[in-house]
Length: 368
Length: 251
Image (cartoon, rainbow over all chains, first blue to last red; front, side, top):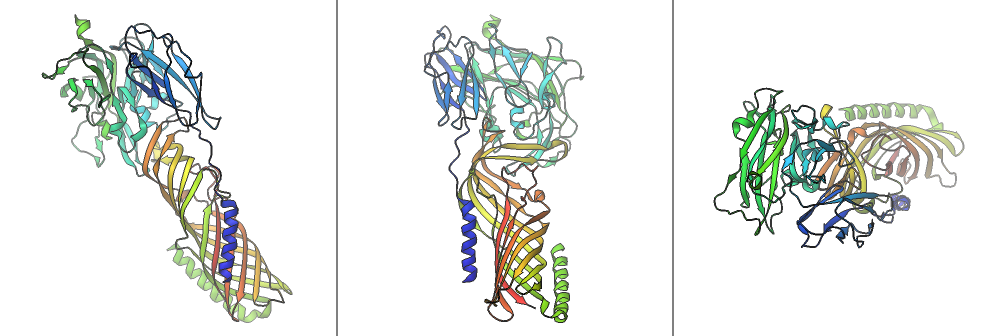
């Protein structure tokens, strides 16, 4: 009985300090959705961290648009979404969390032009972390953010102090312009909290967006590939340097006699209600794929020497049963580079090294 | 092995003190005791991040020890001794906006998984200590079956286990403005970060229901956080707060 009483007293003491407190106010200040009227918007907005990119139809007036913005619960926005904005230039929105302490500044950019040339001359830190991502400027000198990279995924669990330490970074190794894109396969951290084993991280750069939501459990779904395109692509051109690393590692460890290779390819596909973007599971197999430009195995194995760029010019291989019609359908194109072909499966040879520059999609219209 | 060696040491110690007890007469009083530990390695008060405690269980945790009391003046004395103490619990809670920083990998590839977690959390604690108490003892004349003690303790951590999982939730990478990442289940193990020492307040009561046997309750309230201040895995300080219920035998 005594013990029982004493226990009651102790538990009462513990409970004094053990009462559940009031729920803290949400620290989230997110724009969850950004929508423009269907007669203006060509493709759903891409929300990539604090950048919102919307692909709009040509020849529409963008000077006074009222978007529909969905915020995280209880958050507030400045300026109010009801106020018409001139979207011919970037528009900033500041979202404040219910706790009043946390804010996010979003930049919304509207574009009506597909990019066909990528020089990798401009790199920006798009998040609060150190890594850089190439941004491009179109013919009207408008900034666009078509690229995303495995840096974002890697940054979830490794934060390097310098941008140059991340698997994808700018390099001064080049023939034209100032910079080229360099990708490096590195040793991974191993087990991530029992969720996934990552022995190797590859540098992958692609057009689209990396969505970390399910990145740990299912990294192949995290890479959402594709940007709108308005012309039929014929060839993927550019120049590259590639050298495979010495020891190939997969999830079981060292794989003897296996050689790393790089990924250099582009996929042209039709979007529909069920498919806005391809991902790592279906990038080469989805029935909506219309054409693929894939660097042949000999080219993927490497270039003759480490300092000289080799030009590539890869034709798109079209499926015969689809007639490309931009009036009836909308299409997207993805360009993918990776220092390890199977890098999305956390395989590759640490030290594999890919540099690309002056990439261009030659389209039908440009050829004509 | 360590535990075994310790147990042998304690048994020898008990043997020695029994021998001493038989010589020293009524100024000295010795008891051996064993009991079951109920409590928690817990933040006090509970932080707002903890939204709901779904279950708590003490697990297999107990104390085995010996205490010697030197009676100095009538009714009053000083108690010290030695005990093996296993403090443990299992807890299943819901947390919200909990900041965590977890070290991942080794050597050059070491990374940090940090952010704000919302979801379920299961934690299993089982830490072994070697405890040395120092308490004032009170034997009231009018209740001669009772002994009360109040003071403090110092403990050396011998074996630490602090692990668990985060599940059915998400983490905002890097902080509230970071990308949301779903976490089905992730495991963590903070065992190696548990502090090597602990110290705090201690109070106990014995009720002798026979000349030799007593029912004993002993509260130990840790005042040193379980983790050192440079540890960032858990955003709040946790303390060992345990109640032992058991039996004592007067030697």
